[in-house]
Amino acid sequence: MATATLTAGSAPAKPVDHIEPRRIIAFLAMVFGMFMAILDIQIVSASLSEIQAGLSASSDEIPWVQTAYLIAEVIMIPLSGFLSRMLSTRVLFTVSAAGFTAASALAATATNIDQMIVYRAIQGFIGGGMIPSVFAAAFTIFPPSRRAMVSPMIGLVATLAPTIGPTVGGYISHAMSWHWLFLINVVPGILVTAAAWSLIDFDKPDLSLFRKFDWWGLAGMAAFLGSLEYVLEEGPNNDWLQDQAVFICAILMTAGAVLFFWRAFTAEEPIVDLKAFTNVNFAFGSLFSFVIGIGLYGLTYLYPVFLGRIRGYDSLMIGEALFVSGLAMFATAPISGILSRKMDPRLMMMIGFLGFAAGTWRMTYLTADWDFWELLVPQILRGASMMLCMVPINNIALGTLPPERLKNASGLFNLTRNLGGAVGLAVINTVLIDRNAFHYARLAEHVQWGSAEAQTKLQNMTLDFEQNAGLDASKAAISRLSAMVQQQASLLSFMDVFYLLTALFATLAIFVLFIRKPAEPGGGGGSGH
Image 1 (cartoon, helix red, strand yellow):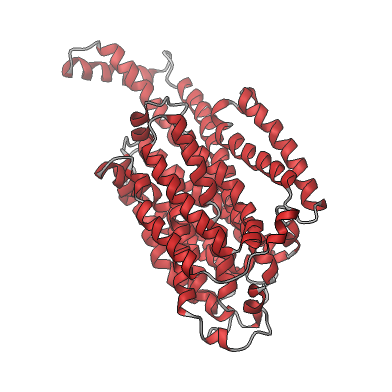
Image 2 (cartoon, helix red, strand yellow):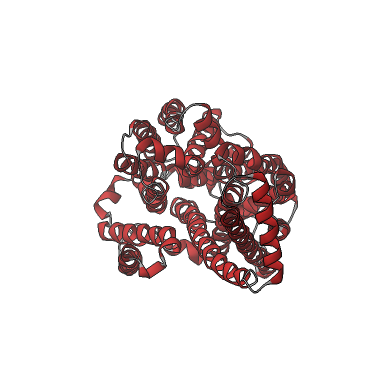
């Protein structure tokens, strides 16, 4: 195969010094396609209320605009490795980009919530094929000496897109309308599709694989990953297995997992090749990628929820308050590229995880008055730490794999980040709900009729309302006091989540010490030029 000649250790010196310009342009087009696919996960998150109003959807139905995309994407990401080997990177990426663009246009034309959910699922499934292709291409086309430039670029795109998604979405839906959240993909999508078809030439298709396609494995994987994503999304808000739909999906997930893993180890050509996990570096890289997913998607969710629930911000104000993380990532990307050539990747990851922990530790001092300036340092720490972790994790996971394993492994590696996000959000939501109820009950004990302090506060508030408004002052005072207790309970539950995240990242910083130093990829990964 063409890929083998590009990355094998015995390749002539030419590829190290010279990469054809058309391949660089093709790669940049692929990176942009991946950026659009990942951005679309989060771009609607800040504008769900506008979409809900536009489609006359209920509050139970509207989260499916997000969930349908995630479920479909999480199935496609690991499948893309097999499809890429069968069809070639060129065909898979072109079809993915064209399908994603068409589904985006359809989503903008949706007139009811059912249409929107179907179009979003198509968008997520087809667009998901673009994401792992970029990671595999980066380690196929570029020799080890050039990876210090390429790895920060794909790391930046993979992490920046979800971070700035809510900001971009907030601006677009305020400036134009929610339809433009999807229409904005059409022109770039057409350009990416044209560039992919005319420029990608990294490998050849192997159509004989179609005869060995493992349909049972695909069915098992779809049931397993799709149901897992649904259970993690819906479980926290619906009391987990007490909800009938969550319970049925949990059974489906278990049955799908059994079928999928049985086929993965017995099929002649399994739909997902799990052998990549026998590579110790890849296994550790995937574990760290899982945790990065928790930090990436968890904090992208937590900050807007805090600003919306406690501060009462709308989507545009949330976007303006949170763009700092994206700037910090952008600024740190080239630095992390330089450091990856000169520093032990384990030390880089350790600094990154400790930076994460410092940022979340700062958030444990949260108050109801926190605004842009108080969130500034935690956001900078988060953005910079993300890039310091992402580059060595990419290199450790994919940098030492043989070329024939890269495509499958790339799908698995990206899947771990998405699953980390899904698991992280489920745990965060569960902790927020449970601890909120716990803190509310504890605080309410101190605001009983027998409490002299509570009585005094209530009397003062009643007097204030009597002077300022012609409404029922005692009812208004009780309502205000209850809201204050609820707000404090909510704040305390946010702090609990940040404590948990601090403990997680601090533990991982210590855990990094136990990894063996990864071998220099291709014998020249650390020597630079």
